[in-house]
Length: 361
Image (cartoon, rainbow, N blue to C red):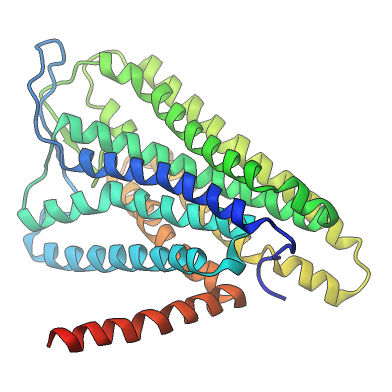
């Protein structure tokens, strides 16, 4: 059985239209993400008292800079290429215009934007031997990091609900998971991510910062930025940790509930073959959920257990770079439909590329 169950008789035209609308919203966000990454220093009043921040990165040793640049550039390119192939394969194959693949394409887009938030600036700093990031650039990093991190988290929850409906209520699947509901769930996930940022960071704007503006990280991590403030950050810290717990535990609870119902339904299946087929539809999603929450938990445990910034950096790399890179491989290797769509896409693209290169030469 394929890794995802493809329900029949879906209104694929309406579903594709919903996907195009939400993809347009994502493109608008991507535009502002690019704008935020290229922001210039702006004139600010004396009330902010904020200059540029310094991202210390991984190491001060110049001999290691080319190694880190090559390593992170290669992982970034693999991440973007892998997730773009997932999106293009789903868009180009009408058989994949189903709820599960709709959410998967949005997850891939969120992963691209998630890595674009931090990695290009880090590569630029390594290449230019500069550690400076403007106040506006830092805020934009925090904004998009929170938004796309929350979007990843909530999309995984929605995908778990989709599997729950497909396995536990297969006869009503196409009625429940209709295109309108799928589009609404994805859009709500995005809106919750934006609200999460606003709640976490609105109080950040009232803070004043000390002369030490060094962030021991490769991007503007909100807890690290709060440590640089001269003002009292108790309220900020409480809000940040409260919102993080809510946005972490509530989706995780939804995932655990969905899979508890899924496992109960699987156990009621009499044949071993039937149990295997039903469980195999969830294998990739479970792997991605475990990787996402495992690395995310590692970030917070490393910061809580040890004061070493090096451990936090390693955990953050796993969370922000490695996980988005591995997701396309996890979702495609065990999925015959996805592998077939990717093969068809590559058979179309490669001859076209070869013909274009030949014509230019």
